[in-house]
Amino acid sequence: MSNTSLERFLGGSPLRVLLRLLFLSFVVGVLLSALDLHPLDLFDGVISFIRHLWTMGFEALGRLGGYFVLGAVVVLPVWLVLRLLSMGRDD
Image (tube, rainbow, N blue to C red; front, side, top):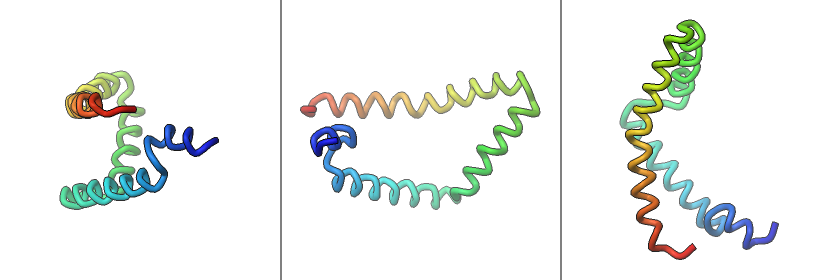
C-alpha cells in the first residue's frame, strides 16, 4: 500500500492520526475518570447486559431497541455536526 493510500485510509498522515488519537484518548480518559468509570466497569457492564439479554429472552429485545434509540439521540446529532463541519474541507 503506497503512502498516499495509507494516508487516505487513515484520514491523514500516520503521525498526525496517531497524535489525534492520543489526544482524544486522553480527553475521553479524563471524562470517564471524572464520571468514575473504568475500563473493566464498562466491560463488566457489557457482559452483564449480554447475560441479562440471555436470561430475559424476547423482553430484553425491546430493551435493546431502547438502547439503540438512547444512543442515537447522542450519536446522530454529533455525526451530523461533524459532517456539516467537514463539508467545507477539501478531501
